[in-house]
Length: 263
Ligand code: PGA
Image (cartoon, rainbow, N blue to C red; front, side, top):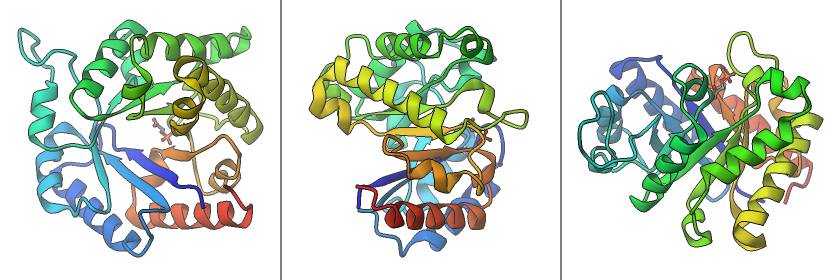
C-alpha cells in the first residue's frame, strides 16, 4: 500500500505536560502500525519541543516546528532560528500556515525564504497553501495555489524538493468556523497542485511530493478524503488533539484506503 501521511499542528494549544502526555499516548496507541505504511507527525508549540524530543520515541512520530526565521542569527526579536531548531533535532518545519499568512501577514516571498532556509538546514519543509473564500468566489483558486507554489518554491531545485511536503488547506475550511471542502473539490485542487509541482520539479520528484489535505478533517469526512487518488494524507487540527480520537481516525482512514485499493 502507498504510504499515507497523518499529522497535526497543535497551534497555540497544549502546555508542555499536556503535549508530552498526548505524544506518549499517541505513540503507544499507534505503535503496532508499520511506519512503512504511515508517516505520523506532530507540530507542537515551541516551548514544548525540547521536552517532546526528550521524552517521546521519535521512531514513531516525527516532530516539527510551527514556523522558523530564514536567518541563522541576528536582530530578529521574537524569531526562532534554524540553528536553534536544529539543536533540538527536529524533523520538519511548517511554513506558511494559513494563520501565519492571514493573522500575521506573512507573504509568499517570506515563505519562500523560509522554505529555502529549512531545506538547506536539512529539515523537511511542509509548505501550506490555500485560497481564501473570496478568492474562491472570484474563481481564482487555481491561480492562487499556483502562485503560492511557484513563489514558495522559487529557486528550490528538484534535489532540494525531495524533502518538501505540501498541505492544501483552503482558508475557509480551517478552524471552528470552517466548512470542510467537499471530497470532489479537494481532489480537484490536489490535482492542480500536483500538476504545478510536476511543472516545477519534473515528473519524478513532482509526483513524489506528498500533498496532504487539511481544514476541518473529521471522522465524518476523513475516510472519503483519503481514498481520493491525489490526496496523500490528512493534516488535521481539532479532530486530532485527543490521542485516542486521532488513533481511530488514522486506523479508519487506513482501512478505507486499503479497501479502495489505493496504490
Ligand atoms: P482544523 O485545523 O482541522 O481544526 O480545521 C486545520 C489546520 O489549521 O491545520
